[in-house]
Image (tube, rainbow, N blue to C red; front, side, top):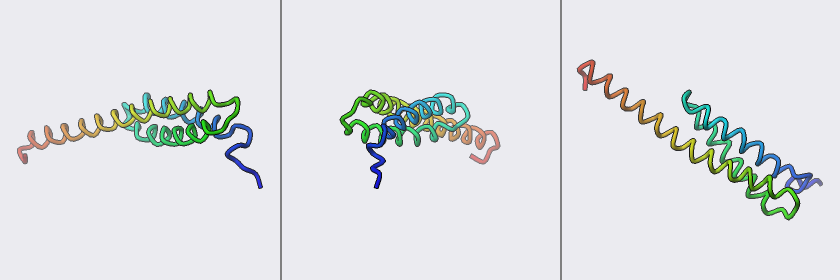
Amino acid sequence: MVNFFNYGGIMETSALVLGIISLCMSLFGSPAGFAWAGSLCGVLAIIFGAIGMKNNNSLRGRAKAGLVLGVIALTWGIIATIACLTCIGVGAGIGAAALGSY
């Protein structure tokens, strides 16, 4: 049986790739309201990075980079999602006040 956690640096490479993807999705998806998708990938990057950091091999740098990128993407994704939801709520309040049903 193959142990996929130690097989050829899959966890470390996955953490790095997901970290890069999550950061791009969080930063560039924020204006479109898709920062939450970057946050989900960021959580996966953090998990894979933590698993990869436990492995004692030469690819720990990839795991650490994926972990850091995942944390940055998760933080930015949460901030952008809260900001987006706040703007929607404020816009709805302004629209309701303009219609007189507020």
